[in-house]
Image (cartoon, rainbow, N blue to C red; front, side, top):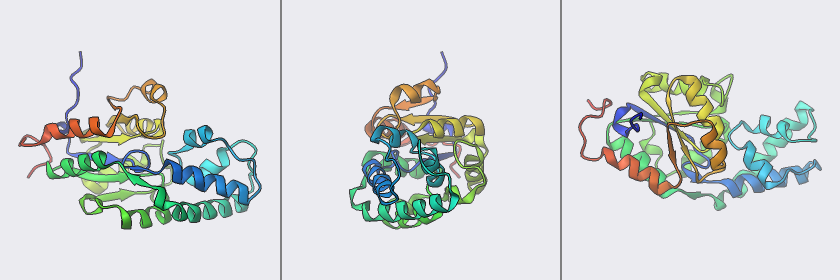
Length: 234
């Protein structure tokens, strides 16, 4: 039986943002819903919106059934949605135990990257209010790559920025797109079941680790405390 990966097996951890470190589901649903009403487009259900979380915003909008394929309108919709996300940002709440897991990993000597489908314009205001930004060594947004998640390009770029090999990193996220990105990039994947992704969908993509709650993620990370075998240590 394969051994369960430990935090100290790695030199770097890549974290998704929405649904992994922060509970922004209501922010996204409200922003998308407001946008569809504003542009008089057929509004998708909450369940459908949740299924699209994890892909870049413009692509996400284009994926919804019945939406215009006019690139100008889609661009305007994306801009409006980002404005709505910021208006509703007060509804965003941190997954404190997940954020603590990030801090634990950093304290254990691992390098940390945020790898997100947010655009740079979305990520910048988030980083200003994210209280663990100082523990993050690198960020990769959808604006930084030609092919965002689930393509491996985002994970590969994060590894280059962190100066680690993909095999030395683990990617933690709440969507099937995170798992696909990790596996295609040649790194381990960990799925969290407390975000937008449905447990059965996540497990169908066979992540190496699965954490049903932020508490279980933190418990796993805490196994690195008082350990000196982390390959990322100097």
